Length: 197
Ligand code: FES
Image (cartoon, rainbow, N blue to C red; front, top):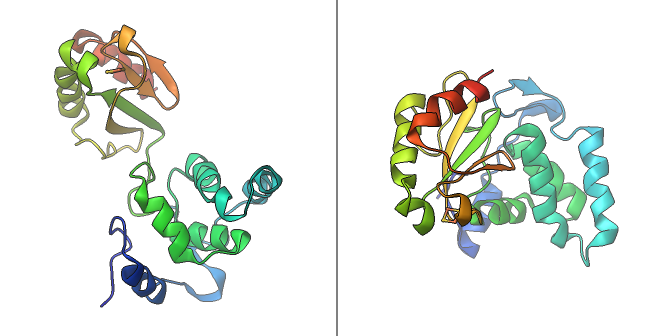
């Protein structure tokens, strides 16, 4: 039985099946993150950054997660070919890298790349008590996108988050890696205008 690469956490048996169903494209080409057919997933710069991590971790396998973060930040998703190339660098199988990647729901696969800005809206207790749910709903309606989705122009990916560690500034959002505190439904329009510039 072939398994979808978008399946979440896979069993050992499913991981073997996944390895057997890996999708390759001819002559080293592949389709990546909505960019069409390209030749190499990892740029020399990304490869160097991953290689630079190797002496800092006890094993190559331990670099899997940092490597996934580097690639995800740079490419806005982790394509199948990027997974294969990371696996090559770390002496792992692509299925092992894919398994680590899908354990965390943080990473987007190539069929669902991130937009230019990733907007997290906190829905945990402190923010919920101060209007976090209404805030998320307002973003959802104004951006015409469900949490986890990206606007049609590719500019904003809306996500919900658990506590961002900014409870004193509830309701809080995070714009890529930067927190914004005390965001209200009244300031949503201005924030969206800022993000789509
Ligand atoms: S509950 Fe939202 S930042 Fe803590």
